[in-house]
Length: 139
Image (cartoon, rainbow, N blue to C red; front, side, top):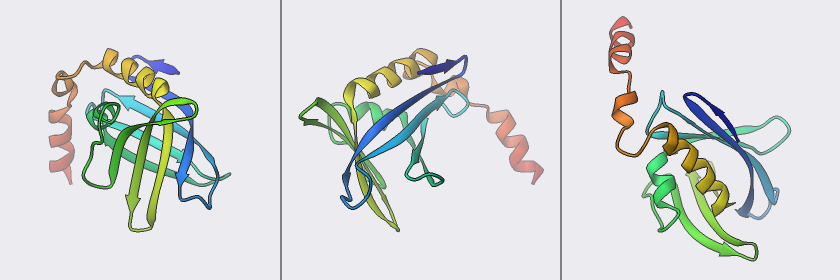
């Protein structure tokens, strides 16, 4: 895991559960950055040159460790496989749906580092509202 003063990135391999016609494992990069304090940015490398990016709430990933969470395009929940506890992440888009599994330990390690950078409830302190307003009114 790579930690920079305002961000943390975790490279991991996730097992593809569905659809079953693709690769069985996919390389994934999870990134948390205090510049976007409520979000986790993920990049799924599904081929030699193809990457799929998703952004979802850090809180959703955290809740998904213990219970099925999410109502929209991203649903996250706990599970088990022959290796032990996993976190199942289902991603839906107009192009289709895929479910991947990460080991719970990998997700906990990532979230622990993310919450060390910005504890739960302190996200608003990292928002750059003035900069966003200037950019909005500049257009």
